Image 1 (cartoon, rainbow, N blue to C red):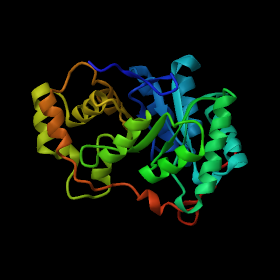
Image 2: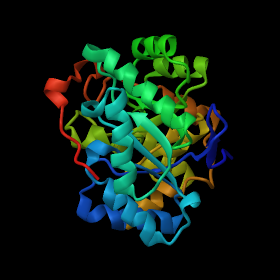
Image 3: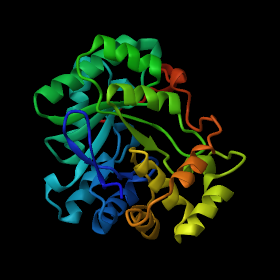
Image 4: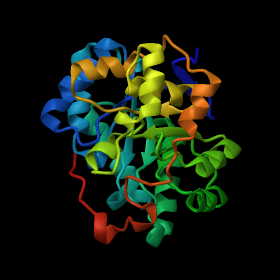
Length: 293
């Protein structure tokens, strides 16, 4: 049975499964977070750009759990890249979350057209790490060429790269780069939700292979996909606001996929990205101001 925690490259232990709150409206975020913590989650993933950090903090407080029992992960948005701006962005996020230390802080996207600003932002993360304000640092949506340059020009290897990974889009060559450098792959849209709401040809939830494997275990397709991530050594951040779905997504530690089943899921890769192309992210196209705490 894969454990429900993963130790990242600097020795910090992280719950492998976290609740994601991307596109979760602020008015339902607190309740979703409190419910997830009630059913057993101990890891919440948010971002400055999601506009719901304050409500995540409220949900954590509502749970009654001690601060050190919950692993809090958030991300710096591209508008706040640059050394001083990124240091200030930490203050904004920590202030909204109501904490003085973050467990994991990521750069949300590479800025290929302004990579020097990206590097300065990462150097600010290194400073926050050295000062004990964050326990681990990393990146999100970085492609091999971005990681290559980052590793050459900074000193701390990212603990995590959070990327789109689900059975229909697996980014195996990027995952190989992670393995080579000791970077944990963390999956966003881990059950392929993006294949449903982005109007693709087919949704992972209806996939016959996943349905068949789910039937063999008395589980849902979503649970099979999450189990696949865990057995392959990844962290996964499923999102939901529905209590039943939140509980279902966490109920994945009591069964094991066979080698044949893992191989069958690996064979579903279509190579089609659901999210934006990382190379297309620019300040002009995606720059939004992140409010003060």
